[in-house]
Length: 324
Image 1 (tube, helix red, strand yellow):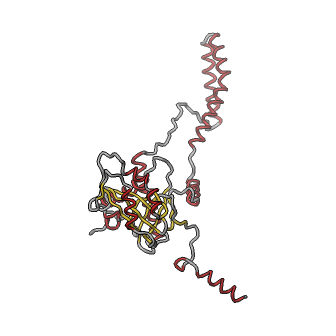
Image 2 (spheres, rainbow, N blue to C red; image 1 turned 90 degrees about the vertical axis):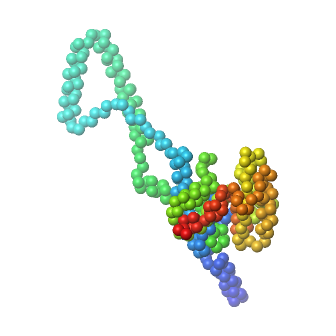
Image 3 (cartoon, rainbow, N blue to C red; image 1 turned 90 degrees about the horizontal axis):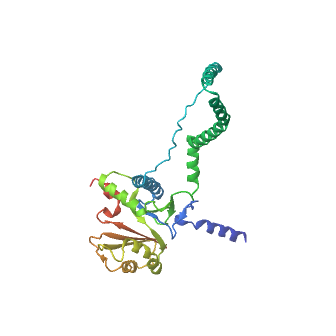
């Protein structure tokens, strides 16, 4: 009996993916998310995901600032004179001078005016209290946070994975990274806009942006990798990029790649996607205006639409920034 228990323990220890210990806190790719499907050098998935997040965040800030710059509310200063008493002697001299001036004014003014002035002075303490309350509230609003408090707030946000805008998701495939993007508002840029900005700027500047990233493909929907699920989930994406009554019909192509999934027929998936596009638009494999990207990783299908796929070196950053 003791030998059987020992054998069972040994067998349990052998069942590990890729003969490696499972990393804690790594979430798998699942249906219902959107983001970026990124290919990279094999074995450099962690470094590529970190580079991808930094790259995407920088271009996201550019897009947000270009479209809607952050207008911080400014508080107008109060047009009031403020006197500071630096010593007791100064305050005494000021009080004496003010007292003499008030006596001169009271002697020159008639009795009726003097009574009006007294009534105003009686009501002044209430006004002073109101002014003091307003100045205190304004000081509370204007008071900025210290650098340590800002750093602690950012660290708390980074630790809490639910508040992160971008998260790494494990695809289970070698050389593939998926970066999930969470939208915080309706006016946030889409993954397609961010990816297109990255690729076009790389093509224009020829500036190296990463060491390990190869292709950056925007993904706007994910579903289970089956013909029925793909035909059902792709309808809103087709309606968005391929309207039924367009001003100018688009020429399109379908790109389908599968990893760690040999049970699906690639041509059947391509036919399902192509048939979902309405008739005014035509298939053109040589020079398409838009390309529907279908990337299958194990049992999850990632779908997106890109413009000028072949002209921009298939969205490959390394080819766009290479000197050749």
